Amino acid sequence: MEPIAEPRSNTKDPDEVLAQTVASHAGWQIDGQGHIYDKDGVFVSKSLTSAAAVMRELGWFTPRGSEATGINWRQLHGVDDVATAVRHASPRA
Image (cartoon, rainbow, N blue to C red):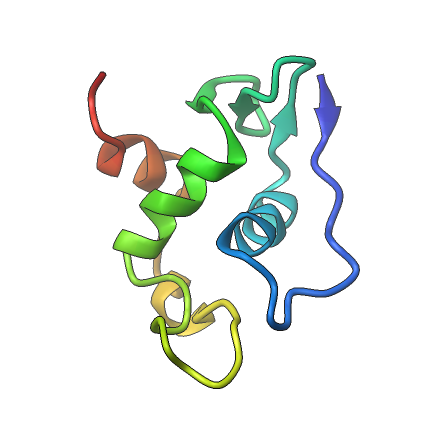
């Protein structure tokens, strides 16, 4: 597994890039198949795309249709464990 790098930008980028930013800040890791793990190596999501969909539902990104994209860091304030929040909000498949 490798640490998830912070993207160079997340302005006017897709949700996956925003999720990559959150994941990088949280110290998450990615394996060779694209599966996402928290800083302790515990599974979080099957992909950044899946994690991004959950983060969008949690209200962590600026609303669709806004002039710019971005992370709504205020929504993350008070979240004790970002990985746990994403795991719990993920659809069970």
